[in-house]
Image (cartoon, rainbow, N blue to C red; front, side, top):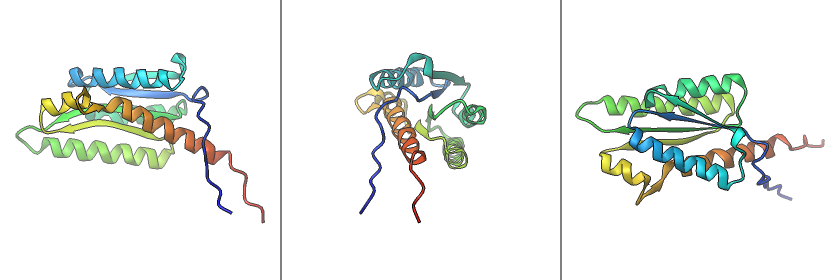
Length: 162
């Protein structure tokens, strides 16, 4: 017999933090709106949602880490935008932030919904921040909540009999 985990869909017990970069705020504000709206549609309580800001995308992991160290959140949504310029700066920022957020979730067990845009142009960022290509803030909230619900289901498993 196979045991298939089906998490409860009740998000009421969850506490989620959104960490949003204020750099390229024209994009990250739209993603924040999408993430908050998704949280509400999922049935999340307003007082169970924390919103923190970071000056740039590079600082997202440090603030997300501080939230996990406090033990006060079940999931984090990281929202930022990095747009390619004329130097390698783009590559370093994107790679560093991605790896730091991946390390954070693997070391703490707190899922991080990755809502960091890595675009070649402002037009691409606009499309992904509530434009034609959807809203990555909404998608990141979905991912973070679904992961947190599954982690809760795993933790509720009984030990195997044997």
